[in-house]
Length: 322
Image 1 (cartoon, rainbow, N blue to C red):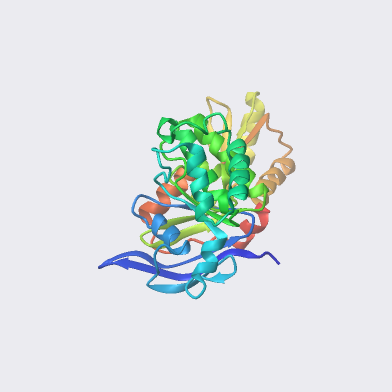
Image 2 (cartoon, helix red, strand yellow):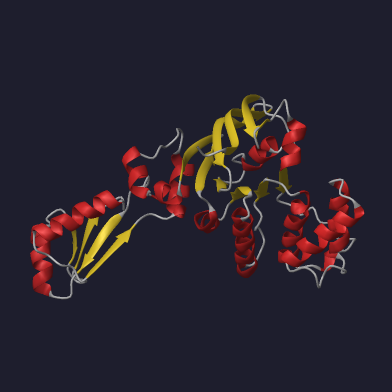
């Protein structure tokens, strides 16, 4: 049975008459990457602050690293690390001094602190810059130092609140690799981001937060299937073959110029098999078959524009996605 690193039920938070979180449920298995998406002001950072004990919820329960969020807050803090939206790096001191400061805050001995600092600086490719003021670091270097500082206490769960905001594409991809390596070491990552590609590339599961509620949750592929517009496109090189196929597949949309047919499909294995069976029965062989599904941009825009209730992934879609 999979152990849950984070299990939250009915979390609520309001500021005055503004409801930020309206009873959200979250489950994150150990050793996985969970991404929380949502527009600005959706409550992503509030969720991170609650789960990392920085603020208290108005209602609901949660367990983080097996500990009750309210009754065992100190045990939760000992098991987690947090990298916020804004850098915690002190630019007036060197990268190494920032690391050693974190070692002191984690009550490591001087010897252990220097050992951990040296290892993490090397791991994050910061050894050469270790003696330089952090104010001279690039955005990507500061972000790497930020995460290295978070790892000083060997947390089992790391909250990364929009960790690649403001980074150039190369630095962003380098950060993705660092996150993957953390998970391969057994760390659980709770990630908030506005970059849809980032969630698609990294996350085992994704939840979309909108108007204080979870609008939908699932794998990237499951979420894409929730949105209409998926289709299978069949292209033919011979006009005769195209006309035969168009006659046999009367429900397909035709593109006579491209000699292509388009059939609605959610992209699941079950639906693709059904289309292939129809082609075999009619004795048709397409020269090219491509499956088109909505991307996470489509999912995000659809859910955050209209979502008022939780969207669920049908059981048969979950099965076909495995």
